[in-house]
Amino acid sequence: MKYATMRQSMFVLNARSDRRGLTEITESVRGWVAKQGIAAGMLTLFCRHTSASLLIQENADPDVRADLERFFARLVPDGDPLFEHTCEGADDMPAHVRTVLTAVNLSIPVSSGRLTLGTWQGIYLWEHRRAPHSRRVVMHFVGE
Amino acid sequence: MKYATMRQSMFVLNARSDRRGLTEITESVRGWVAKQGIAAGMLTLFCRHTSASLLIQENADPDVRADLERFFARLVPDGDPLFEHTCEGADDMPAHVRTVLTAVNLSIPVSSGRLTLGTWQGIYLWEHRRAPHSRRVVMHFVGE
Amino acid sequence: MKYATMRQSMFVLNARSDRRGLTEITESVRGWVAKQGIAAGMLTLFCRHTSASLLIQENADPDVRADLERFFARLVPDGDPLFEHTCEGADDMPAHVRTVLTAVNLSIPVSSGRLTLGTWQGIYLWEHRRAPHSRRVVMHFVGE
Image 1 (cartoon, chains in turn blue, yellow, orange):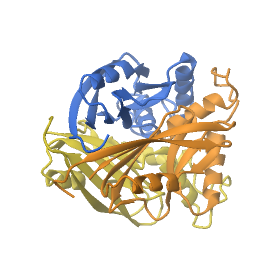
Image 2 (cartoon, helix red, strand yellow):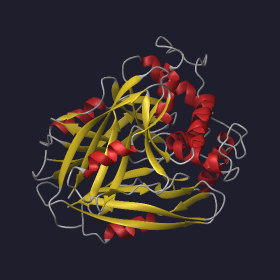
Image 3 (cartoon, chains in turn purple, red, blue):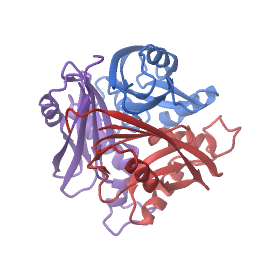
C-alpha cells in the first residue's frame, strides 16, 4: 500500500430519522465507498448536529439497540429538573448530553476496497430528539 | 477534489483554561486552517491530556454549557468515596472519568476552505480540573 | 512538512485480553509506527469489536485504572434487570454500553517520528467482557 498517489473524496449523506433511535447507515456508506475507486485508505464520518450522533455497534440482535435506548433514557431522563435549557422541549438538553456521551465522528480504515468493520459491527446514526429530523453526515475518504 | 497533490500541516495550539468548564476554540482553529492553503481535506484535533477533553457542541445558548457541567458534576461527583486515586485532589479522578466519557480527538472535514461544522456546532476545550491549566491541542490538517 | 509525497501503511494488531480491564498497547503501537519510515502524519486506531474499546488515559498510577473499572461497574452494572439482551451472559449488554460510552477509534498525530502523546498518556485496549478474548485493532498511518 505504499508509494502510490494519495487522493480524496467527500460527500454529504442525508439521513432521515423518524424518531429517537438508531438508523443503520452501513449500506449507504459502503455503497459510496465502493464507487470512489480508492482501494485502501481512511474513511471518516462527521455528524453536523448537536443532538444526534454516530455509533458503531452490534447489528445482529435488535434487543441490543432497544437496551441501548433504555439505558440512555434512564441515564439522561427527559424532563430532568436539573436542566435549564428547556425552551425547545423536555428532550432537547438530554439530546445534547447523549450526543456528548457518544461520538460526533468515526474513523474506519478501508482495505482491499472494503470497510474493516468487524463481523458484528454496523454503522448507525443515533437520533436523540423525539421528532423526525433530516440529518447530514459528511463522508471523507482519503487513500490510493 | 481528486488527483491533486496531498500535503499536510501540523501545529500545537495552546489553550488556557481558568477553571473547570468549556472554552470555545473554534476561531483559533478556523484561523489556523485558513492559513494553510489547503482547500479540502481532513482536520484532526488531539488533546495531549488525561483530565481535559475536546467537544463539539451548541454554541448558541450558554445554558447548554451550564447544563452539561451540572450533568457531569452529578454523574461523576468530586470527592466520590468510590475513588482511591485521590492524592491530587477530590476533582482529579472525576476529571479522568469525565475525559474518558468524552473525546480526546475530533475529526472535522474541510471543504472549499471551510470547516464543515453544522450551524450550531462550536469546538470546545473542556477543562475538567478546578484549577487553571495550560492545555495543548495538536492540530493536523491533510488535504490538497 | 509540506509538498513531500504522502503515503500510508496499515496493520492489524492482535491484542489478548485475559479478563475485563485495561491492557496497555502503547509500546506495540509505537514499535509499529517507528518501522513505517513515515516521519510526520496521522495514526488512526480502529477496534473491530462491539464489546471492547480503545482508550487514552494516565499510565502512571495504576489506581486510575482500578478507579475507572469501579466507576464503570457502578454506572453499567452486570446483570442489570433493565437489559433484555442477556443470552450471552450478565456482562454482555453492559459490555456493549461501556463500548458506546468510550471510543471505537483514536487519532494520534505523529511528529518527528514520534507519537504526540502527552507525558502521562498511554494507549489502552479496554476489554469489557469478563472472559479472555483475542481482539483486533487496525492501525492506519498516513504521512510523509
